[in-house]
Length: 589
Image 1 (cartoon, one colour):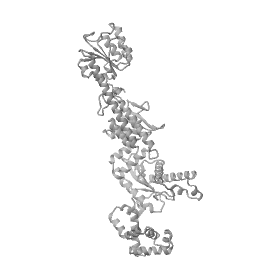
Image 2: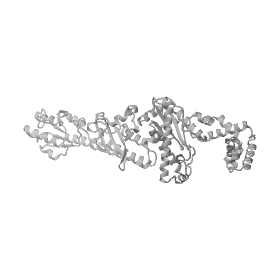
Image 3: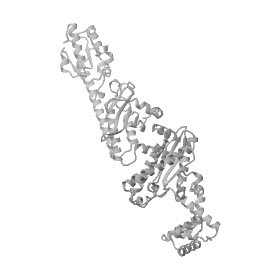
Image 4: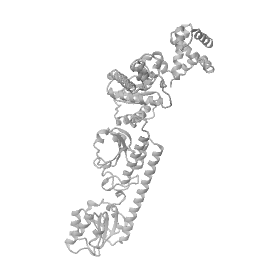
C-alpha cells in the first residue's frame, strides 16, 4: 500500500527533521520516493539487513574512510532500494559529507541529506513512524468505508447511476461507465464540467489503454477497471486521476497521491468494488432492460415530463451516441391495439410482450439505419425520438422504419411458428401477419409532427402518443398514423383534458353510464356503440353486438328512454357518437 507512506520530501518537512537544518546535497530527483520505515545505522554493511524503502539515518562514524569504500556503501544502499540517506554532521564529518559520497549518490539518484545541527534520531523515527501508522489507519478506515458503502448498495439493488454517484463522492474524482463500444452508460463529473468530461468521449476512450484488468494509464490520467462477471465483460469503469496533476499531499477527500502522481491504493480498491457492484447489479437484473435501454428510457421520460434540463438530456444522449442537437426530431410511438395479450395469461404476459415490442422497435431502427432514443414509455407503448439530418428525410425515414418493423415482426412470427408456438394458427392457414401481431394491423405506429429543436421534442412525442391512442379504434392498417389520419378521434384525444369536453361527455352519456354502473351485465353503452359504429343500421348493429334483433331493438328503446333522445335523429345520433369517441379519449391515460 505504497500510497500511505510519506515521501522523503514530506519527512524533511517534519519539525524534528527541520530542527536539524537539513540540506539536500544529492539525488533531489528522488525526493518523492516513499519512506516505508526509518532505520538508524552506524555500520558499513547495513545494506544486507535492509529490505528497501527505508530512510537510513547515520552520524557516519562507522563509514569507510576511503573513497572506494564510500562508493561501495552508496552503491549497496541504492541496490537494495533505500529511499534516502541522512547524515548528521559533527561526529565524523564537520563541514559536509565527502564529495565522493555526494557524487556517488547523485549518480545513483539516491537522495543524500545533511543535518547541519545535532538532532536526536529517536525524535525523527517517532515522528515518521507515527505518520506512517496514522496514514495506514486512515487508509484502512477509508477502505472499510468503501467496502461498507458498496455492500449496502449491492444489498439495496442500487442502479448504475447511484453506484457511480457514490463512487465519485467517495473518491472526489470524475467517474465514467462505458460499454464495450465506448458509449457512455453513466457518469458523474464530481463537480467538474460534464461538457468537458464527455466531449469526444469515444475517440478519447479508445486512446486509454492500460495494461491489465485494473490499471492506471499515466498518459491519459485514467484509472480503469473492466466491468463484468462470469467471464462476460460488458464495460469499463474509469476514474480520472491526472498523472502529475496532484502533488503528493492530502486531497480534499482525505486520500494521498501515490508516488509519481498515480492514484492511491484506496482508489484502486474503490473502483474495483464499484465495478463488482455494477456487475452484480447487472446479474440480478439480467432479465430486465439493459443499461443502455434504461438510459434511453430515462432520457425519453425526462423529455416527456420535464424532469431534467434539456441541455442535460442532449449531453447524456450525445455521450450515448445519439446526437440530438441541430437535428430534425420526430416523435414516434408503437403499441398493440389491445392492452392485454390475446390468448396469453399470467402477470408476466404484459411485460414480456412489451419487452418483445421494445426489442423489435430497436431492431427495426438499426435495420433502417436510423439514430434515435427508444424505449418503453409506459405499460403499453414503445417510444422513439428520431434524430434526422434534415426535414426532407422525415417521410423517407418513417417509411423505412415502418417497413423494417413489419419485416422484424414477420420474421419473429415465422420463428415462433417454426418453434411450434403458432402451430394451431399455421394449421388453420392463418396469415403470417397475424402471427406477428395477433391480427393484421395488430401494431399501430404513430408519428408526431417533426420539430427542429430539442426543446420542442416533447410536443412531437406527446402528439405521437395521442395519435397512437386515438388510432386504436381505427380499423385501417396504415403503415404510419399521422394527425390527419385520426380525424375527429385525434382532435378529441388532444382535447381530452379540457373540462368543457368532459362536461359534454357527462351531459350526453352520464345517465347511461350511471345505468350501466347499476346494471353491469346489460352494458347498454356497448349496444349504443355498436348501433352508431354501424351507421345506425340496426341489423348490422345487432350482429356486431352478438344479439338477436328483438333483443337489440328492445335495448335501443331502453337507451332512448334513459337518455331522452330520438335515436332515429341524425343530429342526436351524431352528438352521441362524438360523445362516445370523446369518452374513449378521456378514459385513455
